[in-house]
Length: 149
Image (cartoon, rainbow, N blue to C red; front, side):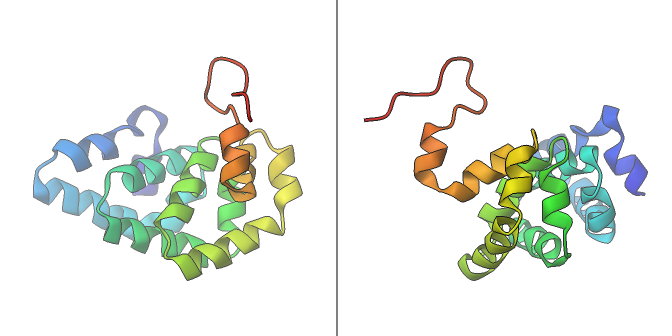
């Protein structure tokens, strides 16, 4: 059930199952995620679970998950502005094929100001701003932003 997949104390379990679980455990976990993907991804801990799956899954599965999420109107924006969602949306965008990635990015660009105003959406906004903006970003670093030439 979605609540079992996204409970706070078990959000690391999918990553462990995908890396170290028996094949039947991995298949069952992925089947459950597929059945409840929209519900899981619509809550913060579910974004973390979805991101963990995207980070360790085969590219074909990642693309399948990303396509389902990108096809749901407004879901990527909602995810991007929620806790754990920014990093997951970046993984979703990277998992999509070029054409689908462009369409999803364009949809998010229409709400770029909302992303920039959100603590959690800022990571997605910087990703959408391009490689130069990402290089100048210091998200996740302990020190000041890197110097640019």
